[in-house]
Image (cartoon, rainbow, N blue to C red; front, side):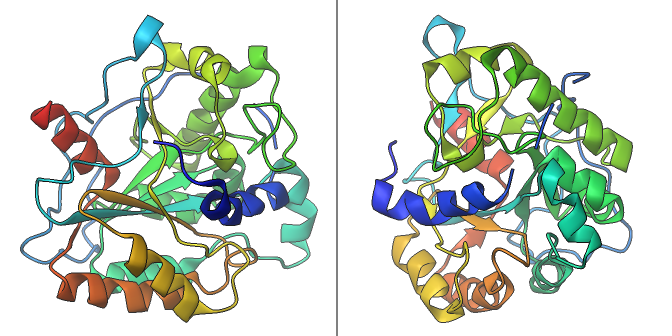
Amino acid sequence: MIIPVRRLAAVCALGAALTACGTSTAPQAARPSASASAPAPPANEPATEPSRAPTLAPGPAGLTPVFTNGPRTLGKTVALTFDADMTADQGPRAAAGEHFDNPGLISALRGLKVPATVFMTGRWAEEYPAEARSIGRDPLFEVANHSYSHYAFTGDCYGLPTVAEDRMRADVERAYTAFRTAGVPDAMPYFRFPGGCYDRRALRAVSGLGVTAVQWDVVSGDAFATDADAVAREVLDGVRPGSVVVMHCTRSAAPVTERAVRAIVPELRRRGYRFVKVSELIGAVRTSS
């Protein structure tokens, strides 16, 4: 599914402000480790992953498959996803006190017992290894790949610098290496293109990794937003059964996301929605196809 440019621009604006580079081993699609301290989700929300992470079959000519949303007819499920963006050149800014993490948001998700998928850049995991490890070892969450560098995989992606085609695979692999170094045991075989921008060349470049490219069908508009209520309305107006919502886990570039989530979650639950991770939606697609 193609996301209208008007709605995609808000999230991709964040990409223009967040950027970095890319090598090593392919991802392991295994079950995340449990955390004894993590809260149990409500009875209707699963606490564990399947024994193997579900992925979609390759597309035509073996291209990387692209997932946008789950089935619309299998109940009211919704996946909240959060991009944890940071680039190599932002290290000095972090050292000067700028916050590219958002521990308050993660704490809110835990308190609300909301499963979620966090798409990390490798550079973010390097800057915040303790947080990456905590998220990766909490069964409430799953960690997925958002590249190492947050450079674009196409030539025209909202002003982002680009990764050369012959470095695209290495950039994704380097992120998985950064996750393992930080102590994330089993990052999922899901990849989100920086800015959401991809083409046939990019899908071919990462096809050997066995990942499913994960897009979204609801843009929260939290990138650089200052009005949490407006972000919440955007999500609540856009969610349908099987939706994937894109939000951000970066205080400096998405400062109102935690407040928006605290409004979104109870309202969607009131409407009968059940929160799931991306892996459950992909599993539902496989089961229903």
